[in-house]
Length: 147
Image (cartoon, rainbow, N blue to C red; front, side, top):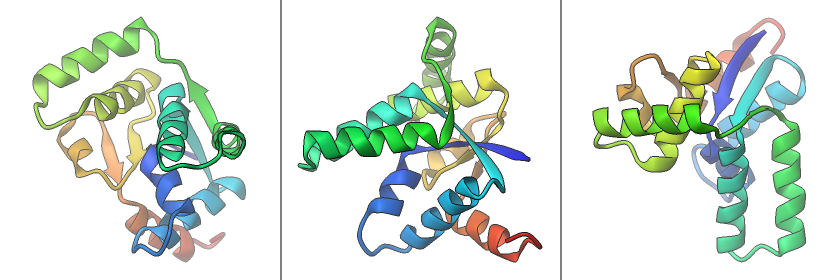
């Protein structure tokens, strides 16, 4: 089964309002729920998701429930000193990469997952990380024989 790291923005677009990425992100998450792809994430993805929901004013209990659901959908990876070292290396090499994206890319590299589902094109510049746009991936998933 294909394993992909999933960026926070996939969960945020899937739960959000009308947007061109909403349905493709939902398709990706349904494929994971149905066992057609496996999702990996770092603890930082769940933290970032909860942070955004709280900042947007969602009730704390609802945020905790949704973050728990996100966590349950993914194989989780820790943010440790190895990921931190890789994050700092990536920040030096890629001036357009923000810190959270560098953490996600570092986790991808350290976990040997190699693909990240994200709308963020900044990942395209990171050697060893292949970004899958949710729209293209959703199209692929819906045209597969099992999709």
